[in-house]
Image (cartoon, rainbow over the protein chains, first blue to last red):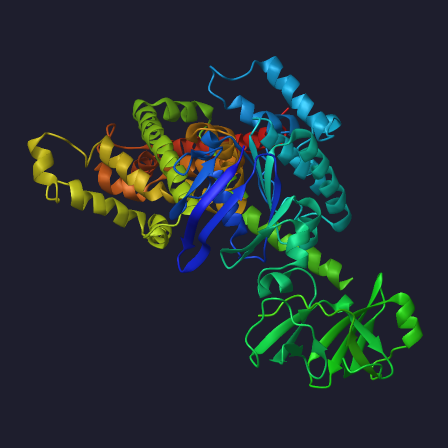
Length: 352
Length: 268
């Protein structure tokens, strides 16, 4: 089932949680809502799910306007951030809840409910824990109970609020992979909220990046990472260096070095900002060409696949550079070492 | 060594205090009641006025407990789940009966519904008796025991949050299904505690009821009032016999609370 959201707005007192948000999600898509805390992503999800009435705007599911419909009438499965399991019910009864509260004329028989619940528990690999209570489960297990519970009523749309937020790093990765494969099997339109960029980029067909209640950019993970539409998106998706520059004679100067300017450029001579990711900068000990600037090493962190170096440029700005381990050993960098920083590419990420 | 001494001293003080102020009076009530022998005790307990006083007490409780339980749940829900203008005021006002002397609480109802009261003329015209009658005693008892259930439930409901209830609604539960299947089981502990305290107060209330009842012997005397009447008439054995019934009731309700809590903790 497709989702279409038009001009949704929501205020909580003086705080704008959603500010004229429009968005389309196609049937069967897996879409991540990504943004820092307070960016309005959870509010947007809750408005789509019918848990929060919008101040203005409409929500269409499968082309039908459901803006004034209650959550239960929307055919939406909701997985809450802290799972919101029923503590007094065991795993089986938690999953069965949505079926048991159905009106008697559509409610499945006791046997049918039992079969369906066991099917779902199999799907989420919890069939041996049906008798346990939520307090006896690990975080990852609770998460899967919450998912099975939401799926029990056969929703056409699945909404997940920070599905992996409260789990430790390893469980997160496992569950992520598992959710991806589950989505491929069930093909339920799925919208999930996260503040973890890696999670959003790895899991989603498309990513919606939100900031201060507005949609900054919608695109595939590749698009938003490599062609960010706004300065916020650049800075939010991964580390980035920010340079204040000037443009002269069709070239962009940051300090001394010149870049080939990106396509849509401000007018000649105007001050501008260039973003460059740390792995697109190179460190050398000697002067190699004109497109370099001087810097002094402040700090080196060699733990990890790349060595992260923090430097102070000749004009006093902090610059981050990621080096390969081999290159780092060649250079033998120490805090205080004077080096030259150059650009590996002419393509800066963007200007603003 | 000093830590052990300290611990020992602390336990001694706590237990000593308990023995002096709880156990000794409790024992004294039963000792005094049975001092003149079981025959006198039985006669005092089964005497018609005593029976009527106990009966009236139970009738008052039968009105007050369900009404105040319902109100307590509603008030706690409103306060814990919604923000609305006047919410802070409601939280403060719920405690008012605890802050006001029960005698004043009774007096308020006399001023409202008594013969010279605000609604006195209207009530007289329609031949409705509230003061010196059962309705007044129920009202006064309700007033003084309003806070018990709400005060127990508000922290429980605030701590649990609305998450599970929202999940129930999202799964298609109606308002009643949500309350019956999710809210009520999750507040049951606090509710049991609140209802036991509420019942104890409703049965034991003296001050407010004393003011509105008019002490009409055999008609508007509840058990606590009856104890006072007997005591003032130097019928100590009788006074302590009725007092022992009230005390027994308190002990039974505490035991019932423990039993219900045990059942809730061990559902199978």
